[in-house]
Length: 153
Image 1: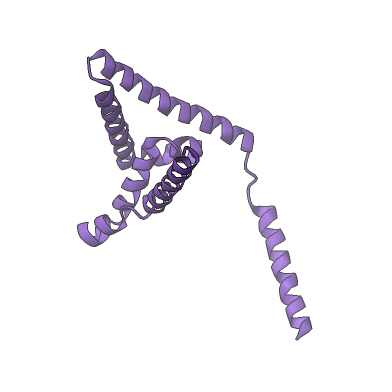
Image 2: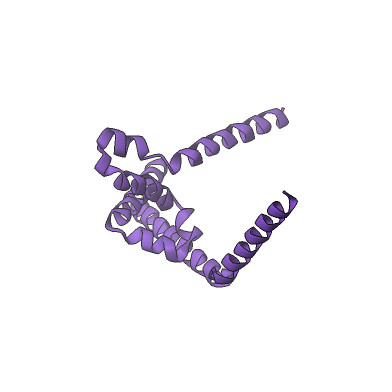
C-alpha cells in the first residue's frame, strides 16, 4: 500500500515537472509595460471625453455620468467587434481595470450564451463574470464605510 502511494506521488511529481518545463515562461516586465500603457491610454481617452464634455458646457455631475456611459459603450462595442478581447490578451490587467473592462466582463458572457436564448442565456449568464466583482465590491465598501463611521466618532 505504501509503495503504491509512493509511486503515485512520484508520477504526479514527474508530471508537474514536465508541465513546468513545457509551459511558456511569461515576460513579466513586458506584460507590465503593456498593461501600463494600455490602461493609461484608456484613461487618457476617458479624460479627453471628460474635457470635451466640459468644454461643451455640461455640469460636473453630468460630465462624470456621460463620460462613464460613453466609456462603457466603447468597451461593449469593441467587445462586440472582437477587438477588446485581442487588446485584453496583449494588455492583460491594463484592459481589465478601467470601466471598459467591466463592460467587457458583462458583454462577453452575454454574447457567448446568446444561443441559449435571451432569458436563460443572455439574462441569466450576463453577470457570470461581473457578479462576484459586484458582490465583493459592495461588501468591501460597506465594511470600509462602517470602519470609517466608527473610527470617526
